[in-house]
Image (cartoon, rainbow over all chains, first blue to last red; front, top):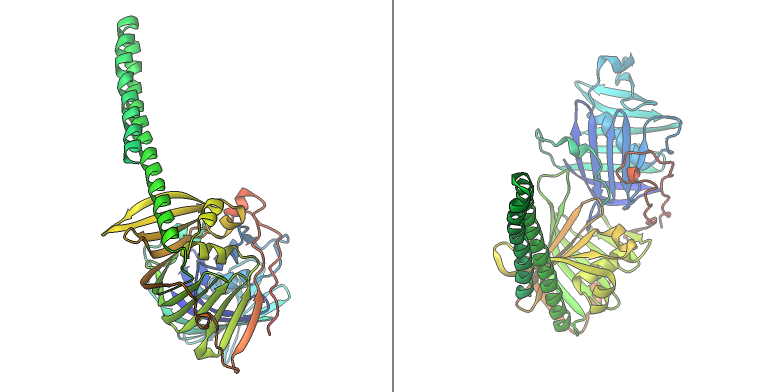
Length: 180
Length: 291
């Protein structure tokens, strides 16, 4: 999937091309953010056990596994958790409770450890997710081919430019390429 | 150069042929067991011959690349400005086909600056000098100015567009020079940076030349994680005097300007970290505020 992404943030602002691949089962996403010229400035891979990524050409990757010794929250983790939630199935095991609406809300255990999600359901779709990790809460909404993410010090607007089914995905696509 | 390549192949073939006669002598002296052992060396000799031949061919390619670059540098010694139509192709492991954009390009040798006026897929103007990377989106009335942590990236690009003898000698090794498929007069020259800082930006750069001239046809680079950029040029025009108006961003007053400092790239603490398999306590980079 290709997206046009606008970001206003303390750590990053600008208009970029986003490239996303997602797998529903087992859940995994990889997302790259590219400027108008040059290679990716942000590259993140997220699975339920690990979010790892680099940006601005860092040779060092940052990795979060949900433990106490994780690095602090960063836009990399925010991208990883948000995209993972948007592409992972809502299974019965994840549901902790519900609130009748409108909007109808499902309280979910997050895909990633130490994360909680409140999903606002419209019909068969999730229109919005409120994601909480520690003291930080952010909101991700989807309206057709458009999406938004609003977090403290970070706002993102995205529009899908191109979407294609990728049934023959190489599993290696969900691993960051090593530095050569 | 062709003679040198032949010398290498010939010497290695001779070496491989000698192994068999030596094996025959051993058979006479020590019996069948020793003969069999010597025959096992024959394929090794052939392999050595092929490897030496390949190395000689690579040396020959590198020499051809150096000679072509030297000719281009000489031909463009007085050139101060380059303009062209361009198409940028960017590959990603996440996409089946490359991401493509196109427009016009202007390059000024001194002070170093390159401006891409993008027409597709969306109109924007990208300006890169030794200290800044700027993107102006006229339709959004927005200018994003990134302050670069070093001049490695722009220098690399400028060296690809207009290499000099000094920049090549100091900063790069010519790795190969290969013929371009379906273009008999074109050669793709691959340069590997020698500086540690430059290697953080690019693992290699490529320069495609038309041997008639020689004239620049394309340039590109591969970042350290394998992402590739290739920019193909058409309608190349070289002039001895730069038109500075081409390199100024004439931005309307109502344009919102954001300024951000790009942090210095972090180095991996371990080999595992470079492969993104070990956790790190590094905190997220903090960028500068908005203007």
